[in-house]
Amino acid sequence: MVKNIAVLVSGGGSNFENLALKSAEAGFEIKILIADSPDAYAVKRAEKLNIPHIIIDRSKYSAKKEFETAVTEAVSNFNIDYIVLAGFMRILSAEFINFYKNRIINIHPSLLPSFKGRNGIEDAYNYGVKVTGVTVHFVDAGIDTGKIIAQTAVIIEEDETLLSLEEKIHQAEYELYPAALKKVLDGGV
Ligand code: GAR
Image (cartoon, rainbow, N blue to C red; front, side, top):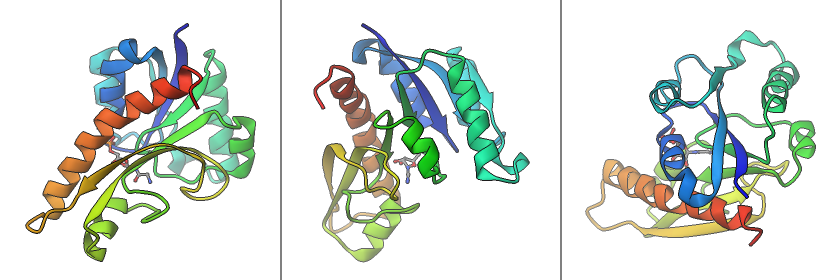
């Protein structure tokens, strides 16, 4: 049966768009896109793709709890099976994570547990590792610490630039994220 997902974003939304385009073959439907800022380009993509979307502007809420309550309310309007983070750059509270226990999934642009945090690609590049990659994982109360669902390695060549590495990482993400979601939804994780 097709599973319903909500996608949370903060920015460009290229992973969101990729998931939308591959949703039928991966067995899910994006019921709602939630952006935490009106500047998130992902909203434009949702308009073009005709996917319901809502902006819950984090800057309009003084407390994280109120922001998360608004997100929970938006999600509750749909029969959502999983919350999928795609470039969502905020740390969710333990309360929110527990509410959706084992039903929040994230993509991170490094081979976790290396290079956690906001700048996974750049941190790996600057460190000088020869292999980095992409990780899809369940979200737990730590930062980028939840159970790993799938990973892809990306080689950093001698003449690699940060830009070319970013491009390679994104291409790896576009393959890995729909496949990893499909695995979860099929009950394989
Ligand atoms: C992606 O590379 C994703 O892995 C990363 O943000 C980018 C979003 O790109 N997420 C994190 O770094 C989470 N810590 P997109 O908006 O074009 O999909």
